[in-house]
Amino acid sequence: MKKKILCNLKYRTFGRITSALLIAAFLMTGCGSSDSNENTTAAPATSEKTTEPLPAATLTANSPSMIEDAVKVSLAKDGMVKNPLTGLWIDESYENKRPISVQISNVLPAVPQTGIARADIIYEMLVEGGITRLNAIITEYQGIEKLGPMRSARHYYDRKALEYDAIFFCWGTSIYAQADIDGGLANLEAVDLNWEPGGFRSDDRYAPHNAYTNSDGINGRIEKKGFSPEHRNGLYQRMYKFNDEFTPINGNPAKKVITKFHNNRQPWFEYNEEDQLYYRFQYGDKQIDTETGEQLAFTNVLIQFAKHTPMPDLPELWDIDWTGEGDGFYCTGGKVIPVTWKNVKGVTRWYTADGSELSMNPGKTWITVFQNSNRDGIVFENPKNEDNAGTDSDNSSEETDESDESNESDE
Image (tube, rainbow, N blue to C red; front, top):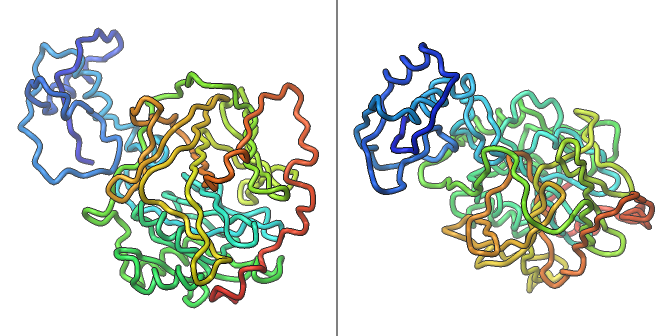
């Protein structure tokens, strides 16, 4: 892995650096002094590439702080790099890999899902009929034996996938998503497993809630269609900024986060002080991944308010506006702060109230995209005694995924 040593950092004293590491540090190259803040990060935190050559580098003996950075680079967490979607260390072979973006069913007959705990980021958005559908953004998708159940695409999902330069996988489409896949959305690379090999039907559920894929199917389609498994030049931009370690935020209490789409759809999250994670609940119970047998949990929960508009010729279908800017909330560590978002050169960036870029805690993130006309549906609680009865459980058995069948090419 290419290692870059950058310098001109503040002097520090380090008492635990061995002579071997000192020798290794001085054998590596660094950079010349500068009064600017450019090129001051030693470890390669993301997979972003620069098109301009870096300046020639030198390392001087009077820069003790460079020793620490040289050690970080030379070890690189034993051959690991930072995942730009989580801020966590992953194998260096994933440094420039494109993630996949997989459309996941989320109605009662489709739960529990399988394999979605692998996701770095999960989106939840409305589709027609008041139901929600998930999209799992997954970087480390090798070794998955079963992922799903999958469901049909909506055009605002495939457009979100394009922000990540992700390869989009679905099982069926709406007519608008199909138009995107057929070439209406430049640079989108997608696979519809309803028509292509790479997926399978399980025998433990009835269609359409039993459609799955796996790593073999994913890799096979990527290879067959000639999609690049690595980020394409100029089509990937960093979307998130992460702290080096968990850092509390100065916000209001948010031990319980309720996302009330409507009376019969009120999933929620509960914060656990011990592991500093938000645990996901829906349909009156824990949301489990059958691959792990564990409840879905996230370090970060983002609420994104966005304009939802009925499509003019098919008003039962939604359009979600990703352009421009908006606001929302960021939850971590049992606290919540207001944030804003802005579409910057085709990708969504997040900011704090003072205009600074939001720096999130390292870990997985759940993003709920919410109607900006339904702000009262987001509720933050700080309960002492949890009582989950009634939350997202009343009449939940009435929620099905059949209302959209007439508008999509899905079996």
